Length: 440
Image 1 (spheres, rainbow, N blue to C red):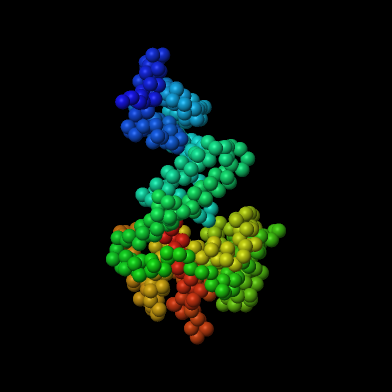
Image 2: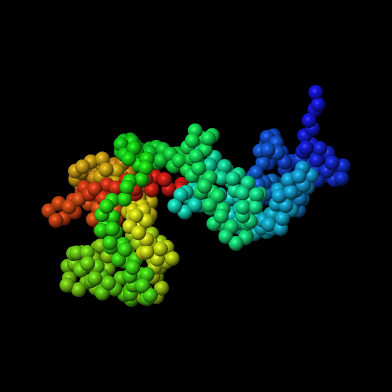
């Protein structure tokens, strides 16, 4: 029987005959990198993570020694024919990051590490409209992240893109998207995106309190796929489209001296959408609840920015202003749930209640929201659980946004505390988007 030699052992022996100290350093680094799993277990991202994070933060030696370890590992990689990994070890980027940790401290070094990872081409990018990676990942998401990194490395090695080259980030996103969306035989035909979304949805339903657990269990089946865009989406989105159009105009939307929407624009909104006003000529958005609710919601979409006395559309705002109803609906509906964590928690519970109870009273809803928040561990600044009034205040922003877009059922000419058909579709889509968001 012919004994097959280990190329790493051979390379270390060869290096040892030239520089015994370098061979010892290379072996120590190689062992820490592979954990006995061999060369086949290594990826470029693993090498970078070791050089740019593990080595500078976990190895208790001076800068000179860390640079020497990186150089020695590079010499080992060169001897076993892994020149790309050797180049990372010997790069000015690696030396700069190691020096940055030593000279400027942990935070500066970590920031440099993250920048270098993003610029390397093997760090999985966020893919707009498909997946934003979380910094707190479950098992499936972590596995998907690793597999996408491997796919990017293969594409890089094949010359599909070159980090720093023209359009390389867009190409990397395309590679990642195709891999995430593709059916995988090793996943019984599922895609990695399906696995990640199923895991996130499962984690969202795993609640600490029994009340929320019961609600999510009743609704989770409705969130497996996104709800269809309702036929009257254009009508529901009219206020949002109107404000986006105003801010996308050449001079934007005029603001008052204290930064509120101007009188003429607010008066136009009242006339166009039937917003109730207590005065014949409202002075600004402060006088009209729908106006300041609309502005807040559009701001949460990152669609506007202020410049002097004008409210201007951002690049994203201009795209949304020109988008079709389905695209705009998909962007706006998740923003029904405000970004503030406490308001978001209350909004989720209210939407769950509205989807599971055809005729809840407002008082009954706020009491249930308060009890559910308390079970989940929410408390005020004094450590007291939220009361019904406090819960109603936290859920108020959601209620105003539902009312603004006409997503509540109409009763005797007024909005009832029930969802319209379009409102039910919006609630499902908003909850699904919130459940599938990245965890940080």
